[in-house]
Image (cartoon, rainbow, N blue to C red):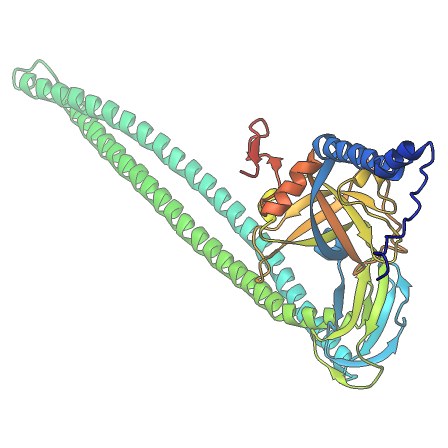
Length: 450
């Protein structure tokens, strides 16, 4: 047999001199990986620093539209003041008008109504004028009666004073006559006692008796004069009372007539009021523009239909001199809002770039301040926030572009927090942090996430 086969020897490879170096290089980390690791490490450090120190402006967003601050500056309707037909429009849709410019002419259905109303008014004015003249005449009569009464009272007073003087004179004369009568009686008694003794003559006795009778007669005349004076005074007092009663009755009658005239005036004026109202309404058949603004819509055409008083005939948009934006926000965000908070606004049709967390770098937005937050919602959980221009920021676009009804989006700015805190808050669904007044601006209240 043949000898066992011997293995065929393979030649051993020959290693180069730098074999170990090449093997080390193959096992080493590639340079690109090291660069990437360093880059990721730097980015991680920068991200941590940004999350810790970068500020983030929290905000509440909402949408709305441009409107006016006061209701008279908002869109309103022009109503028909009287019943009738439209004869002529002095404007077309889109016409700009000034306050007092004619808008539409309305004609009454009854063309003779204004003439008849003026006739009724003239008749009513005549009644008022006649009643007024009668009142003036009665005023004069009252003054005359009062003056006549004063004169009669003065004359009656003089007569009463004269009667009092006559009474005093009669009383004095009566007292003197009484004394004289007493003296003459005593003298007569003495003569009668001395006559039988022969101390006085018959002649002396007769003279004493005559003197006594004369004194008695004078006494009676004085008493009669006193009675006459007292009767005269009673008559004067009765005449004064009669003058008072008569004058007072005449004055009262004249005053009653004056009140009747005044009642006639009031009644005539009352009857004149509805006529004046209807005539004034007829005079307003030319409807004028209530303010500066633009005619938005014409509801009716000339002669097309009969309109009633109060029907809308046109829609009018006043010139908005104080535009504001009404932004609707969620009821969940409403407690975070307060007056004078800063707002950033983006108007429709106005190019803008808004960075929510950094409003300072936004382009094309406008600043605003909260004017009012409604006390109740709209029935769907939304609250209206009125935003006005910020006087410290750039002015809003002119009213030529910023018209009522232009849609807008607003971001109501809250507190500034770190970016990391904002991300953590959003991941956990916590509310924003806000500082606002509670009625006392010196007492801050902090609503923060717990």
